[in-house]
Length: 150
Figure 1 (cartoon, helix red, strand yellow):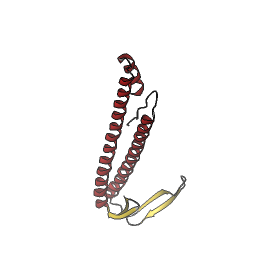
Figure 2 (figure 1 turned 180 degrees about the vertical axis):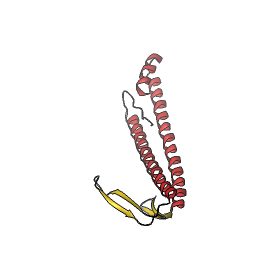
Figure 3 (figure 1 turned 90 degrees about the horizontal axis):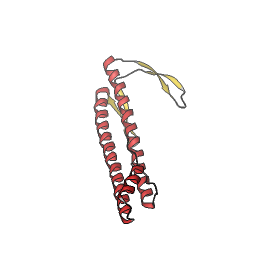
Figure 4 (figure 1 turned 135 degrees about the horizontal axis):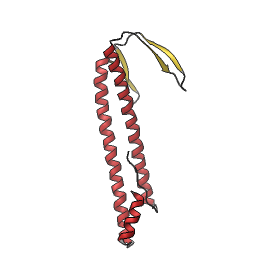
């Protein structure tokens, strides 16, 4: 997991950069959570395919950890959240294909966010080094202060 570095003496620029970095890291965490949800759904769909079950009984969380028994009379099709509040009905095999593509897209998005956070951290380091050089801080003290950020 990416960690946003904070300077020992924060300046307005560093606070903004750290805030931006934290936002990117939080969005990446949400994306990783979506990936995990789709992977879990994929496992359930593959289980339905393997078992070739026509009828399934399950316990469904209806909120606040209150469960209710549910009966699914036809397991040949499934409704999947495709994003932006839209849902689509798929045959089980189609759902697995869609989920694989969705996970691929979400993983690319998470990787992009990781790169973005790393870039922000690199910018913070460059700014801090520039400030230290302008303030003519001796090299030994630079190394000590750098340890606080990393």
